[in-house]
Image 1 (cartoon, rainbow, N blue to C red):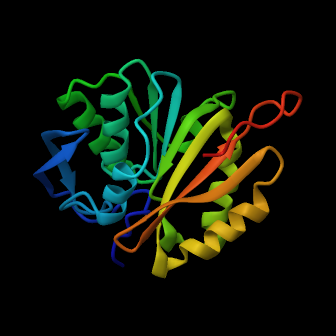
Image 2 (cartoon, rainbow, N blue to C red):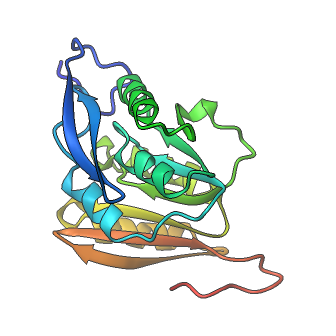
Length: 212
């Protein structure tokens, strides 16, 4: 049976490769491998997300949900050296690559982890994700219902989804699911992808803040 990028432990022998990519305006070398998502390049969706979401906040805890070899996590770590970036994936090979890449780039603020390694009291100042759409709707919805509520107040999540893989229906589901103190809207459209923004508003006693 072929490995999927969302396999916890890819069965195929690891074959690493070095590629050149641009992260936060810097051309760098990173290590990738078979058995992880988009091992040959930064995939188009992640590129759209990185190009159409704001720079990271200056500090706090950030979540890269479904980190792969680490394009989003490494970018966040470069933008916010005083933040703590939680690079989350089920794929142990991907997590090992994130660790290697962070170390090679001198980024000591990246934590490559599985879900049970994130303390339950951590609230995220931002969430960025190219979510694993191909795991299927039930599993994807469960994933988002687990992590979107962990967004801190006055904070935003940005997710990129391909239009022909159901971005608009996912946005409608999120609008219906994350209601109290949350708002969901389309943030950007580019190259066949949507960037969806989810905002966790301020304390309801003080009223919501602007969603734009």
